[in-house]
Image (cartoon, rainbow, N blue to C red; front, side):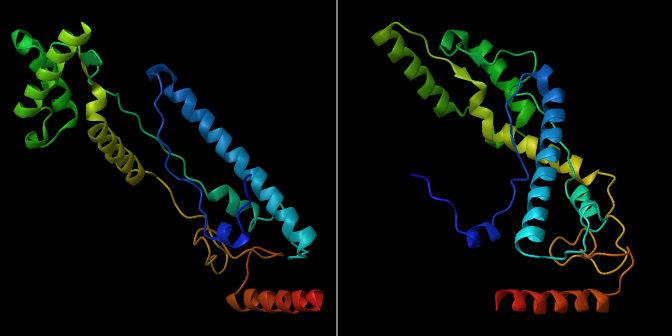
Length: 226
């Protein structure tokens, strides 16, 4: 039976902010648009549920409107969505190659070279090294003799290098973003550092006023608990 996490565990739980998907090339853009839309819709839904919990159950800032710029504006500025995509394996090349026997060496090495040039920057890390090729050939021969079946190598062998290349590309997109922090008419939230301190009333507020609101809420909560 599944157990619900303790509230204290949820305090330190974060949203996953990097997702990796394997998709057909012609589906990437549509999938990314759907992912963005779903993320923002679910984020808005969670924000609404949290607001209801805070106001209805915990009597938190009863004068705060849900469409307040310091609440809704903060939620709308939270997520910065960006993505990148790379092919798994050299485009135009087969995803696997069974030209492992010695008599097909040229064909096999050309395929390996195409994959290595696409994803490996350090030639010392090229796949496959001589001893590894010898092992593959022996495995190929053993399987052919015992099971009358051939043996092949596929682009999954380059998965780590492909993943790294995708990660570097994503970092480049992230660094090239044209993004600015939203305007905060007063102290910024110490939780996110993105938006202003959440408060009811006008946009402009001083640090002293935010502290006074916090003190009032503390006293109110103590009275409620008593």
